[in-house]
Structures are given as structure tokens and as C-alpha cells.
Length: 400
Image (cartoon, rainbow, N blue to C red; front, top):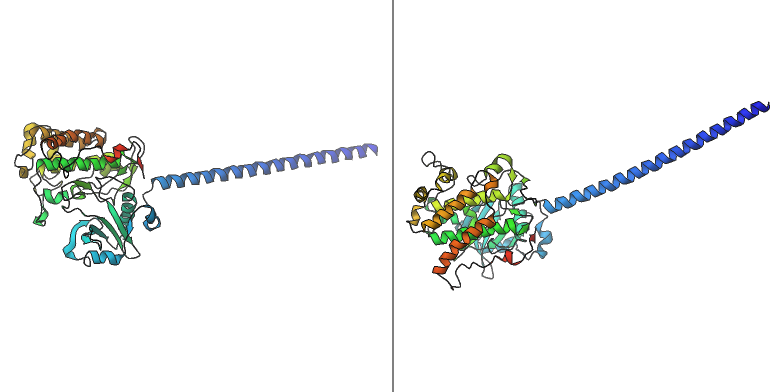
């Protein structure tokens, strides 16, 4: 009997020990599971915050410009004001055709002359262009970029208001389309050099003095506008994209732009870099040299694509003379032509890595323009002043 009681006592002790061990195991498991869930949730939150910060710093899907307009110094117009300024958006006031709408000449109630772009009603891309232009140009400050003065944004109308450039786009002076512009000017060599330098300074500001860099993505002669004194400003930022902060880095995006100006690597891969703009700039230099459009398949075989035709001739003194714009009538320095041709040749290299930075282009063009400045218009207040760019006066970079 005593043996049986002793056995039962041991059995109960073992059972109790098993229960205790099992309870401890279950409790430990619950603690471990709770800690795992805590860590997982914390990591998840951090990941979401990081992704959101990254998105906010790099996206070009900017917020509704009306929300932040008071911080940007832009004037918010009513549609009625702009309707009145353009005489009801009269066809007689049309001065240009943008990618997503017509551009009108207008006069505000205070007498200011302005350019007013009325965005097309249809299409999401037009809406995106509007947001990008407002966001970009409200933060960018350079005398070489067209200034955005204000906008109108309501449920039915999207309108952008810019400073007015009396002499229109460079393209219409190099080769008036169908004789449509009776006021086209015959640009001499000195003026073409000045325009080339000022346009280069505009791109240099976007690439070198803004962080992250801004890639224009649609740089072309029609987007280089000229003021009363033929000073040039870069315009039309609807397709602009924030670039990569990494050296040699790229952003992948849908291929957009204008035929003849799009860099080959961007067209093939969708990889966009500041060097894509450099290629487009090189095409504009070729236009300034030759007076030819980038693509004209009505020309003889082999001459239809400007870059393909001109590139082999840019480094040969005798052949460079043959491709020069006849409108210049030989009124140029051969030494300067060879230098500009060499710059153009480097800019349109098929391999992006071989193209120069816009800062290098500016540095190469400055002495050429200075030479002309020293021999004419020195001290004239309306002349082109080669002082340091406002962007270089401040060692810090602007931030987008």
C-alpha cells in the first residue's frame, strides 16, 4: 500500500513538472511571437516612411499647385482676367503652339505684356505638364530661364502666364516655317554665339546648380525664346524630369521629346540623364551653324538627318565651310566656327560618356563671346554682360 502511494506521489510530481515546463514553454513562445510582431511592425513602418520620403523627394507628380501657391510668389489669375487679356483668346493673338496648348499674346489690366498658354482640355499628359511647369518654375531662378508669373487653375481651365518675349523662338528666325513670320530676323554670327552661350547657361543652371538636377527633356530651338535685345531664355518645362543625384546615374522613364533632338541612348533604353540634354543642345548648335532643321527627308539622300550628315564634316576645316548657313554670307571668323563645330561634334557623340558637361560648354563659349564684346558694345547697358551667373555667386545649390 505504501509503495502504491509512493508511486502515485511520484506520478503527480512528474505531471506537475510537465505542466510547469509546458506552461513556461507556451509563455516563452508567446513572448517571442509578440516581440517578433513588434519588430516586424516597426520595420514595416520604417520602410513605409522611407519609401514615402524617397517618393516625395524624387517624384515629379507634384501636388496641386493651388495648395502651395502663396509660398511661391506666383500670381493666381481668374480665367476672366486672362480671357480679357487675350481678347477672348483671339486667334489673332496666337504666338505659338505648345505641346499641350496654344500660346497667346496678352496684356494684363496693369499694362504688362505677357505670354499666356491655354492648356488643352483633354488628356492626362496636359494636366501633368501643367503641374510640372508650376512646380518647377516656381522654384527655379535664373536669368536664362523663362519666368513663370502666375497661373489659373480651376475645374475647367488650366492656364500658365509667362513673361513676354517679343522676338519669339529661335527656330522661327533660323528658318521661318512657310514664311509665316514676317518679322523673322537674319541672325548674324555674333548674335548666334550669344544665343548659344545663354542657352548653354540655362542648361548649366538646371544640371549643375539644382539638386537633384533637372533634365529638360525637350530642349530645342523653338524652346529658346528671345527678348527685345535678342537675349535667350530656355522655356517649356512641361516634360522636365528630376535626374539622379548619383554620378553617372540615370532615371528610367517613358521616351518623350521631339524627333531629331532625342539622344540615341534615351530613345533606345528610356534611360534619361543630363547628357541627354547635352545631345539636344548639340543639335541646336548644328542648327545655328547650318540653318537646317534636325530632320528633313525632302533633302537629297544622306542629308535628311542633320546630325548624321553634319557630324563627319565638323572636324574638317574645308567641309565645315560647306555646311555653314548661307544666310550668314561668310560673315564669321573661321577660327570661331571651327571651335563651335568642335563643341557641337562632342555634344552629339553617340556615346553619352563622351559628351561634355554643360559647364564645359559654357567655359568654351565664354571667350568667343567676350572677344566680340571687347570689340563692340562695351559699356552699353543693353549689351550682353558676361558676369558670373547668379547661380555661381552662391556656392550652395538650389533644392527642388
